[in-house]
Length: 140
Image 1 (cartoon, rainbow, N blue to C red):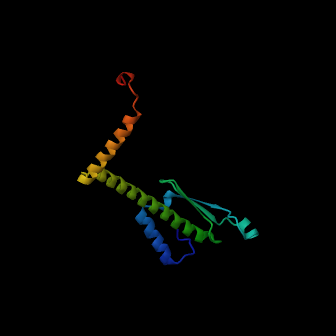
Image 2: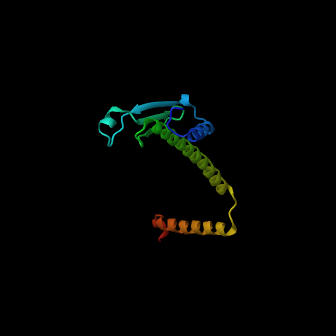
Image 3: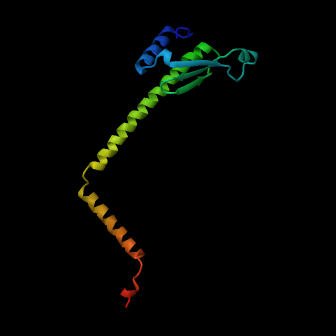
């Protein structure tokens, strides 16, 4: 990881962020691909696009933003960490939503809320009564 052409401070910050997220270098699969776009012979000869996969989670990232492979390696790691953090935040939000929904379902309703529900039930039962078949014996 020290082969990046990035300032030491940025490298240090990246290592710290990886440590906080629990990402280890050995958990990453890194491949290099020839990237497309302008550049002609230079683009065809050098593999500057970086493919990065975090094996435990299966999250994949491709980065070919810059012409330099080392910068793309750095950016790919940042993108991967951002995806991991988003995934973690989404999971926490989903748990919170579930908990809040359960709390709302279990709470006691207000008097006005109960009256509203009862009025709706009565309205629905009247509607269903109108759909009921007419008994021929009751017409006589």
